[in-house]
Figure 1: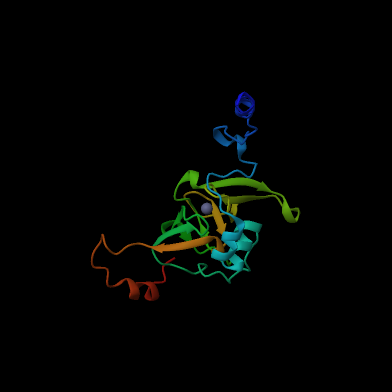
Figure 2: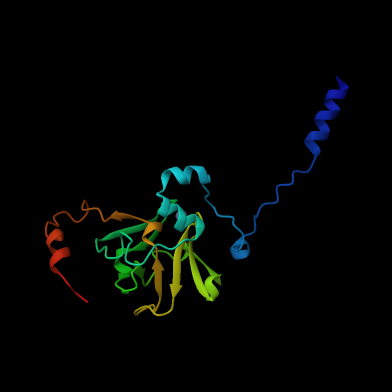
Length: 183
Ligand SMILES: [Zn+2]
């Protein structure tokens, strides 16, 4: 009996080496610890091969091939991996780069930035702050007022159209999308 108790005590009092990153602020940014994480196996099943490659292996889809490059519907672009809201269609513009481009974020904290020195270039990588999914890159040649160009892979995004519930009648939306060529 006493032997069992002693063993139990020892086990209990041993320090648990669980020193994961618990620091506030951006101290842990460089390490791969994100608030949300998904098993790679699950992602391989849930995402298309291209979505997986881009978001998990920091890939880049070929220019002009992404489904959202010329997408002009009103709504919100979410992270395809975790569903976190990233960009609004209000800040989307045609950069003629072949990738969906935005001049602003939906929320400042929704995207993390990091230096990327791949291919002998210095670029700024954009990553989902929630799950660490690779999104694309940030450049400083965007339009006013921000001057920023978030060059994002379509494969990193999931689009949610603005709900017609609030405004009520918006019957002209279909015609407007095709007929209008502003800017
Ligand atoms: Zn995400």
